[in-house]
Length: 241
Image (cartoon, rainbow, N blue to C red):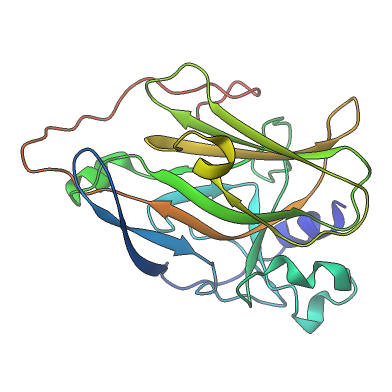
């Protein structure tokens, strides 16, 4: 299952300025109200069905992810017909795994995090976000016991929020995960989210795809003074994320 990821990192794709789709739904926040944003990655042009993600994509930076357009004819020999559904809102989705061409030896999962907290504050936004929901599935036909784990990191907490789901063997439809409803806790004030898909006693890596990532940022109240927290979580490879 590393063929797609390895091929993706060898492609130097051009991409446009980041964009998003705003659903216009306001949600409660103790300081301000703000619209949630659904990131569908469809504004990123692909070459032969693939692309890298811009470094600052809607205030986030993504690692161990690539953009994929599963229905592109150029990928017909690399993607199963059963995985054409990974782009819930076509044409694009993300494919992720632990493999990172910039850090080949790392053992942590794919992650997305705040790109530049200082810049966000200058734009009148708090340097964190809420994770509302996403669509996700393992690629291909995973072996029994394949698990997708989502971890949310907050500056104030030593331990991350954790939610996971197990998949049976075979091909799967994308699972629409409502983070608050499924985990029974709000996934708010996050600066980073890590996602892993693995199987077996040795927790071997497995590729997964993700689409329609809904996140929420919040405007800073005029009376508040905001600083960038210095405490960060240390991932399993020893890096700060």
